[in-house]
Amino acid sequence: MENNRRDFIKKSAALALGTIAATSIVNKTLAATEFIEKESILTEDVKFVLPKLPYEYDALEPHIDKMTMEIHYSKHHQAYVDNLNKALAAMDANVVKNISSLDDIFAMVDKLPIAVRNNAGGHYNHTFFWSAMKPKAGGIPTGKLAEAINASFTSFEEFKKQFTDVATKRFGSGWAWLVTNKGKLSMCSTANQDNPLMKLDSVEIKGTPVLALDVWEHAYYLKNQNRRGDYIHSFWNVVDWQHADQIFTNAK
Ligand SMILES: [Fe+2]
Image (tube, rainbow, N blue to C red; front, side, top):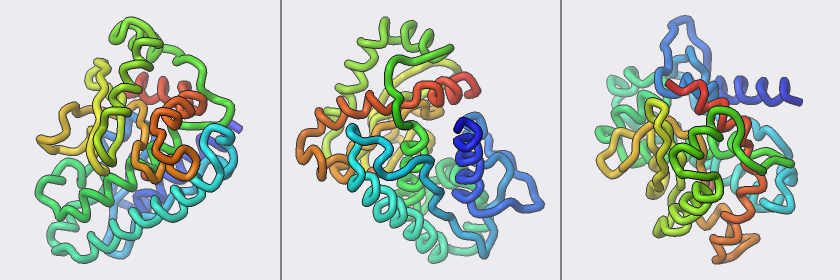
């Protein structure tokens, strides 16, 4: 099972970026997460591809329902991938040739079309979100991450309270994040499909995402309608803390 999961992460990472090319380009920011392929390049005829989900649509029931998962993944995430490819295809080829990864996009996102920003963010954020959850998970953090959470937020309960607050108070559509920067944990929310890897003044906390929660209504409306709080409560039952600890431990 664990091997399958690792294979999924590696395969989906490769697919997420399109291809493996002869030229090696190290993806500095994302390499630590083992989530995006480390050596890859986006070429003219390569497109971003929707990675396979690491579990079935109903695997997170009863916390996240099957229909929400199916529509969220196969319609919403797919649309971000398709629209990212379209937005890149519409750009000046001389600019696109300098883009070899999502990391490259995020590093110069303030100079790129808004459609690239929104859809590259949507693609990354959702891929990250799927891998942040797993069936029969939840519980409490493990390893170095558990120690860091206790050191930064006094206790796991206090961390949960603060993260829930950040996710609840994000006005409109966006994301809540736990971020590490040089081993220091912080949390923030971002609007729309922005994320802490983006070089944008509006992104208050920058660093490597450790945990993410999608608080767009499309993530919970079918099951919870307007009750975002119920959805956030459910999320804690499917968090893959082992995966989050791995990201935190490997982050530079
Ligand atoms: Fe979403």
